[in-house]
Length: 134
Image (cartoon, rainbow, N blue to C red):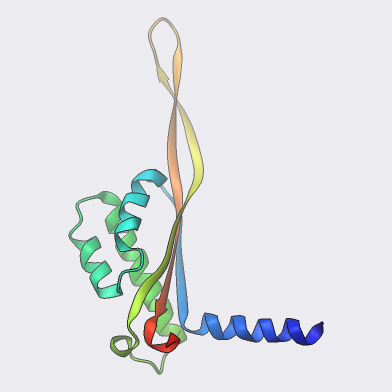
């Protein structure tokens, strides 16, 4: 039992060596709007993804661009000996989850009030290299 656990731990460590991630927590954009932009770059090569995000007009794209740059920097910190140009980095996984919801009240006619839900999200982006995997 102990041997199998050790082997899986070693395999996990090797798999994590050529991937890096970055997280953005409590981003004040609704998850639905963020997912529209996240779907554009999922599975795309990093340089192309940065260009897509740079020229996209949505507000969420600027936040995702900085997050992607952070993930690339984390990858470089992990793999100091490898060159980014040779490693074919790509957006392996991008995940947008709902975060806390701020509840606000908007006055409505006849003394009523409507609840406004100001949504926010958590984004996790995983960057991996294609050349190491093959």
